[in-house]
Amino acid sequence: MKSANLAYYALKIAASTLCAFGIYGGVAVAAEPVKPVKITITNWADVLAVANVAKYVMETKLQQPVTFVQADIGIQYQGVARGDVDLMVGGWLPVTHATYYAKYKDSMDDVGIIYTGGRNGWAVPAYVPEAELSSISDLNKPDVKSKLNGTIQGIEPGGGLMQASEKTIKAYNLADYNLQSSSEAGMLASTQRAYQSKGWIVDTVWSPHWLFQKYKMRYLKDPKGTLGGEEQVHAFASKQFASKYPRADVFMKHFKLTLADVEAIEFEGNTTNDYATAAKKFVDAHPDKVNAWLQQ
Image 1 (cartoon, helix red, strand yellow):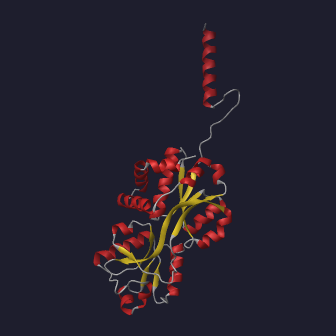
Image 2 (spheres, helix red, strand yellow; image 1 turned 30 degrees about the horizontal axis):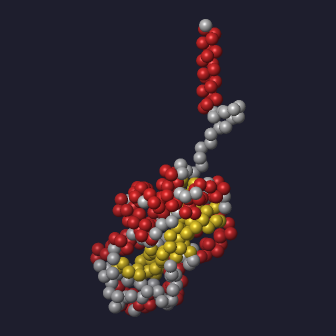
């Protein structure tokens, strides 16, 4: 009897071991953890809004883990092209990232356009009189230059908007101005300080951006077109992305937002300082959009 019991327990242990290793029909199938999709991002409001929506959908609807990889925009393109990261969601064409796109386009896949209506420009607070400053060419007026302390408030150096701004300074003969490199956060802090004292400021900024919801701002006219026109925002993927993550690739090909969608997520994310929760709130409130994104 004792030996029978021992045999019984031995069989139970063996069966448990087989189940633990996923052995079925004599073939060992060791379960491997799902590798995360690496999405490369910058701390720009539009990128954070879009990337967090993509992450939330992949993780909750496709059970596909996602990891964010922080990098400057030039490094993002390089990383995607080399396959070091899988995806970027803030590729601006045809003007803003034209240099990067020309260099790396043959080494990455254009997954598709996420939204249209993007725009780069220089903007001023609405309280700055249009009669004095309505166009970039007006920056040559001595009194305007004095009120601006000869400064154009920029963002991170090397970005497409800053490159276009450097060309704009040359095109409009603004060599006496200083294009102040900073960051998006630095630009926003400068804008807040200016607003508090009704001071004059010119920001390098873009749409979509929650800045236009918090403050009354207007773009300066750009008759020479050096800052570009309407932009399309693309997702770019590594050449291996579609084969490594086929379901995520199909999702990204259907992933579409409007300019208003992006600004709404931005505003919520900035207000709460929580872009992940803002993305969840948006996705949960738009099931029809999600269904369209997930069609196979």
